[in-house]
Image 1 (cartoon, rainbow, N blue to C red):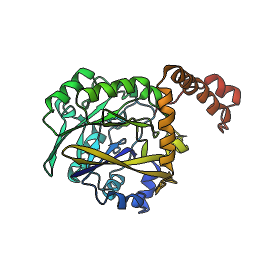
Image 2: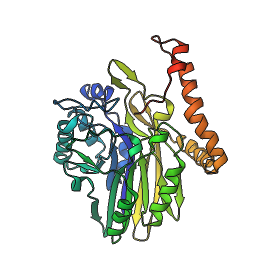
Image 3: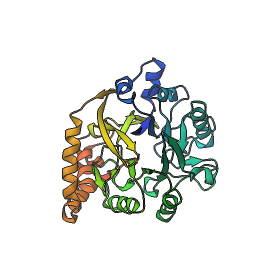
Image 4: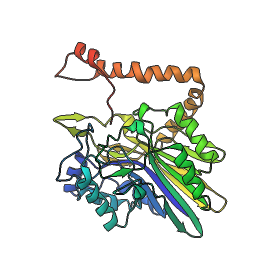
Length: 348
């Protein structure tokens, strides 16, 4: 048997830098649940700050320090997926510093590289007689915003290429896909219908497990042909973003709840167990009742997959919710009228 655990977006930005400097360990509560995990995979959303500028095409930009990256050692991270929309926030310098830290810490990584063939290379692992192929992609709707002269490559999702990757690695016992996707419904409690269709195609062509990121919210999961699809695990950890003199809040309840997915693989298949937790003032706390919310969300999702209900949710998420957020938010700089007239969804 092999146990691989998965966590969501890791954003060691801003306030986590201060936490690390004060020698606070925010992830201690999860350590007992990782004690029987052979490998932990997480989506590294931020890179170390470089000294040669930032990617001005990306707004907002997030970053961390080399010292704060050491918090990854507290959870014994084994695999970092790097196909994210913030991988180039601090140009080649920030990317190379981050990769250097991962290499020195014996943390495997995939999904991005200084060469295109490196960014598309799958991660092949063997343990206890089982073989695994792990693939990592990013979809264009997450807006990575790399300039044409970027020296960094990320593994952008193209269906034909992904199906080829699955076919080439069909000799592995298990093929796992880590997806940075769903940009059109970032912040939503439910995935886009296109993600549902795409997931089924991938499983039909050999994927055994799909684990998604990017929405910053804990979205539903489902089982299709005996294979699990986790549309988004939400934020493992994320601080409010301090950018250009303003603070982009990442502290709403939907952005602070997540699950750890523990997948136990045997030769004939796998099972999963969820451990729910909440970010409370940057410290992670086990909160099992969140699993009840996940169950309810899964039930609602089963209804939303029927088109009439989905259109209602789309209108609510795209039109009604952004307007309500502007009406009820506290903003000393702009009047209510100004906020309503100029509101638009923020992309993170």
